[in-house]
Length: 117
Image (cartoon, rainbow, N blue to C red; front, side, top):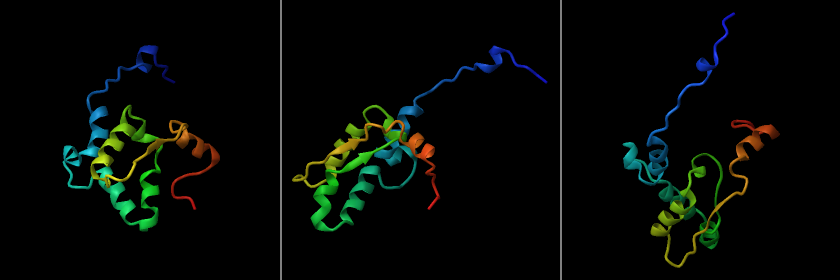
């Protein structure tokens, strides 16, 4: 049996600018080298598929939870980008679940999992 020393256990991990570029790629997909719609355009397309009488409510009920949404400033940035494409008479509200940093853990603990029905 091989026992490693503490120096083998601790390793230096460096985080470069990719940490900040990845979320930006959701707002500007060309940065990722792909020709896909941006997140704001996907949200707009989803709302446009809703009946006319609920669209205003949908623009005011955009909720974020976990993952990339934990990036500082992400909700504000998304709201700003949505403001550029939404009708000017609409008030956009991007909301963050107060437990968004533990939602995935909580769902896992409850027994929820992807692919389960």
